[in-house]
Image (tube, rainbow, N blue to C red; front, side, top):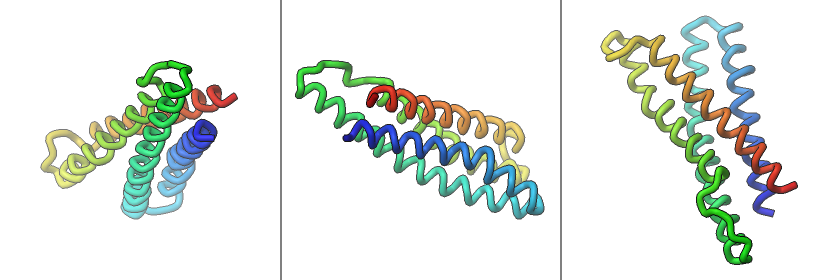
Length: 147
């Protein structure tokens, strides 16, 4: 039961990230003025970061439970699996990409930052992309494990 729930949560998280990347963000810049779209997208990414933190932690806890249950059943297996590493990678990308870079991006917009807004935006985009790939890989691996 926990394995199916893990696969479902990972798939929903991946779909959420894809929706933000390919629907919400481009649509905002297509129909709103640049400043309004920026404010809207900033709010979307704030919500996404909070959701990602919660889902990442829940998925890590689920994997620890599944590993413990397998060990108690005598099935062996590693306590440090890809189903644990991938949420850790996604959490790292969330913390570094959103909570680490957002203050720097605000400084760059004000002209007082250590890097340009474009450079920081590129790094933030890379973190978001890696997070998306990690979450989709987790969904795929988790689904294969339940089949």
